[in-house]
Length: 178
Picture 1: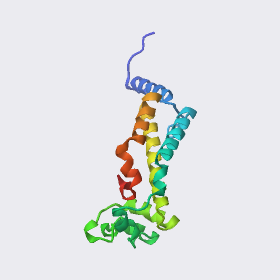
Picture 2 (picture 1 turned 180 degrees about the horizontal axis):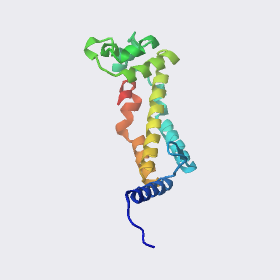
Picture 3 (picture 1 turned 45 degrees about the vertical axis):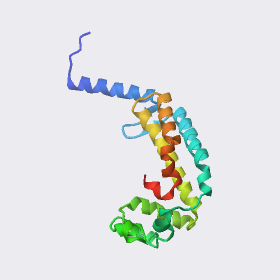
Picture 4 (picture 1 turned 135 degrees about the vertical axis):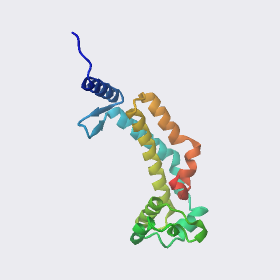
């Protein structure tokens, strides 16, 4: 049967190819605005997060180091009342005027840590480990969403999770913004 080409035909074909690619990636469309993740991807994400936690669990026993003291321990500005000011005043980053930086989200997470556990270093390290695990899972999910195979996505996300270049951002509290 002969079918004439029209823009709407092209759009339907592209949409159909996109949906097939999403199914292969382990993602099925529930509606136009929501996505569900299949069990294999969920298990992979859980294993990846577990790997990060096992790999970096030793950081929880570490203390504060170097820049942590002027930007966290001795910083009187890390209180919930100042969260809005973090977005306006870069001088709140540190007690040292020469160490001024504009990092409002970082300061917000430090404030949340201080509010939950005071200046106990383990909670700051735990937050870094959980953030790194979350980032590794996001990489896994995005690569699958882009259509990479399960093996390739898992390998790339695992490489990100365990690569030594990321250890400073996880083990050193002040490098959370990295």
